[in-house]
Length: 332
Ligand code: ADP
Ligand code: NA
Image 1 (cartoon, helix red, strand yellow):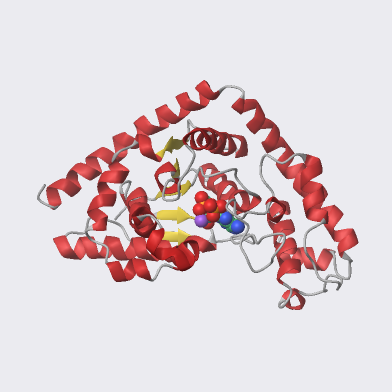
Image 2 (cartoon, protein in one colour; image 1 turned 135 degrees about the vertical axis):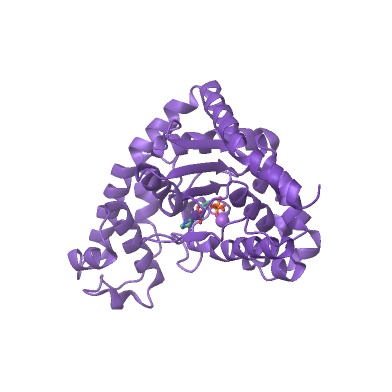
């Protein structure tokens, strides 16, 4: 009963990583090219749940927009905008704060990870983050959300919020969204520690590949990536207890468009001294055109701002009438 519509977002809280590219951007472009309606958002209001330097946030927002465009997002086919420019997100977010339960939020593992032992002293926004994320999605009545593995629990909460809202008000208003978690690299791991996800918030720059890294830096990081001394196995099962090796195979698979099984088959018995340079060449070949285009786009920030403003206008035109209905349903 709800027409297919895709929504997803990325935090402009630092440069984009290979994890963001393979887990999100690359798939955002694929969905756009399948001809489904696609809405992509730079979620700056999520970014400020942890303090951001204002000048850096402004720069990172433009840089993330450049990353989307360079990766193949076409602003005439996808809606690309900045969350804070469409106030319907914050407005519906508040209503969802009143629908979601404290207990639900307390179970979010990302909050526990990010807050650590310091949970008394993190922002209230960090705790409420998944409720704003639900609003981001549902303010467009989006039905599908392409994300990495790490967002699965938040999407389940989005479903719970939609169901509870519909029940509380006796309506069939919000769709119950489907997470689109697919492909070899829905969880790209750190190059320094195969048990942690690659993230822009990791303090070690060696742990990640940034979309702004030059060819030389990418090659060096891959050659220095942590591995074990064994050669590659001839079968996927042989990667089971080898998180670092498995991660590099997954990255190769995602970049090449082949399955991890084929990559293992092709490199069966190879040492990392052979595999890593092949992976480095592939990563450079795939990422260098994106980096070059990002740098070109960043020369003209006014043009990026213009694209984002246009996207915000189109996003608002969809979100505002849905929000008006929500106000009506809730008696406001
Ligand atoms: P980060 O975790 O780097 O701060 P975001 O929270 O802004 O990034 O996530 C943006 C999108 O990128 C989400 O869809 C998320 O699932 C995806 N993503 C982030 N890191 C990774 C990763 N290491 N592997 C796969 N996908 C990732
Ligand atoms: Na994340």
